[in-house]
Image 1 (tube, rainbow, N blue to C red):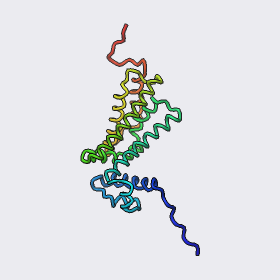
Image 2: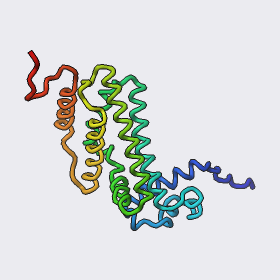
Image 3: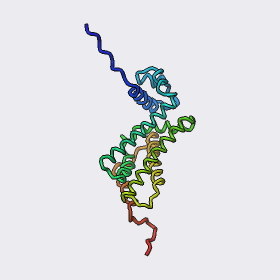
Image 4: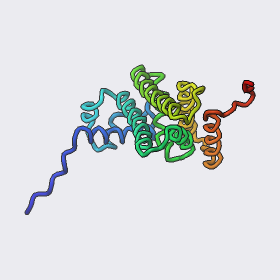
Length: 211
């Protein structure tokens, strides 16, 4: 009789992905403090040795999961730009998508990471670094939109990037608390109006034009 085919050997990257996927689910369901490395390993179908062979500890695994989530968002922005989407439209897309439940799937993970960051210095360092990287990318998008003439030069790129980060993280926290997102139509209309107010030549209410 022919011998049964053995399971394909997975690469180190594939094993890391399995562990991160399992960690995201466990952290989201059980919370960071209640999740044990044994639970993550069991869900991934691996041993605890596989975890410690790839990550220093549970905090490292949480930080890697947050990094991956933010990097995935970054790649989505990059693909939109590569398709020819204008930078200003990409920025508008980011805020418009905050009401999309599919974009809030990782909200529990981020909320757990923010809570753990207050207690664990290593988690805090990694989470802060990941958020700073996301904010830097947003500021670069703003500056690119300004160079293309789609956003007013009066807009402070760093301030707008921080506003977008506040909105995104705030939406994640509210979603974790079970607060329903805004109605899609009115929200997208509001975002369009807000960005229209940032275009060159738009007169800010209450400001007098020289003359």
